[in-house]
Image (cartoon, rainbow, N blue to C red; front, side, top):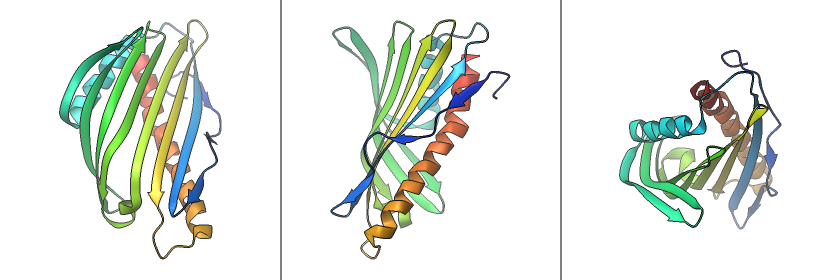
Length: 191
């Protein structure tokens, strides 16, 4: 329960089997959540505006936003980077961010990593792509889908038999952080 609104989430599921091939683990995890529409809420255009503010406050913006129209679809694109410390490891991610809003019914926020540089165990991370799709069914619910795709190189000393289950566990841990932080932020913005 967040701010009086009810929400539920399914268990995270793999979009494709999470496996390690030739020393690289690939994970593609999806989490679907629903928020009850108990009262009038702010529209997705307000969420779009708040995401744009969040991008500019929490990232180093290298390019953008650039507005692109491709037929009936239009979106904004940025090239940004983040520097942070996670479990004692420094991480630098440079990525492309796309943000689209279709008829105030569906908002899609996605990131595609272009460069990942990290120390320690995080240094094995090769790419991370993330997507959040927020779709409203007026008078019923808001569906929020999170999708996280990662590629991680296996350390030379780790057996695949041990490495792959650990990598899967880390994917689930990261998705739980998304649920605990980003889902609640979205719900609060939409109130």
